[in-house]
Image 1 (tube, helix red, strand yellow):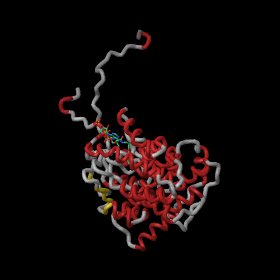
Image 2: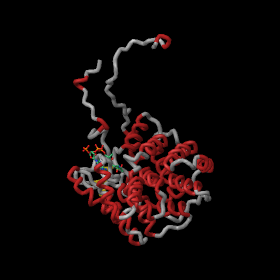
Image 3: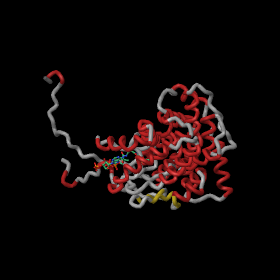
Image 4: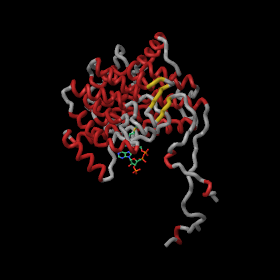
Length: 380
Ligand code: ACO
């Protein structure tokens, strides 16, 4: 018999601390985010995705020589096996996140260290997955459009190479820079749903590929990574800045949620949104398409009374408009989030392996008890 009076249920594990971490610090009340102790603002403004990945995986900023070696290691790992390209081709009609999940799962068959759960091997696998995942996403995009996949360009940085594989064209410096900032902002975020799910998988002493597959599967939902896509769908439905106010009010009055607002942890503005807001505005003006930013700004204003309830914009709010302006299809948006997050998932798995305990909570049973089993021939 369960002792119901002693059970405290925290639905959704709200406000529950799972473990300690040295990965990132989040103060949701004031909108503060640090990776390994460094401000997200300094990293977004001054670092690169390669350097941030090193910082996350090794716990400190690299020297120039260390960064060069790390970057060379990433560049050398960009290609994916032909068999994985064939698998992507077979499933190319699926959603890009399903294809990414399948592609990462398939990569496990070709990774020489797939079963080695040592910290060193897990970091090496994380580096390989970080390097190869953009190739999966770009290869899929090309194949589903009936185009030949583009080989990785070893002369370009991580973000620039991704855009070059996607569009078969070297990106402008500005677009490569924006993609780089976007990857930095998505790289790590504590025990969010996908990282938690990855940790659960790791806690059974499964392996990094399995944990990253879990992370991708969990990120896909609209309550987590799917919001950027939904924000843009909403902006497309709104269509003109003049419609934004009435659309939002109707949505709220009918009990709907405005995508890109609200966060389980942040009860102030998500500090990552600031950088994407600036990029969204600049890029819209440069491309002669300021309307997306104008629509988002009106949504922001209509939602401002909700700040009193702790509902502010989150990282996904401006991201979609940037991707759209860069010519990236809507259904690829979550995959971009996933590409940035691989170092973070790897670090969460490393932390889990470093001090492992099986993650296995309880659920309180509320169904009937001790029912009599009636054989099927006697059931009426
Ligand atoms: N629009 C309108 N109202 C909202 C929104 C929103 N986007 N988000 C929360 N609320 C309201 C809820 O209706 C609820 O109001 P009530 O107390 O009057 O019933 C209150 O705020 C609390 O909402 P919960 O769902 O309990 O908060 P929770 O922490 O569980 O949800 C979540 C967080 C899922 C992100 C939610 O804010 C949401 O659905 N947002 C829209 C989707 C989105 O943008 N997701 C991306 C999150 S960021 C990320 O994963 C990278």
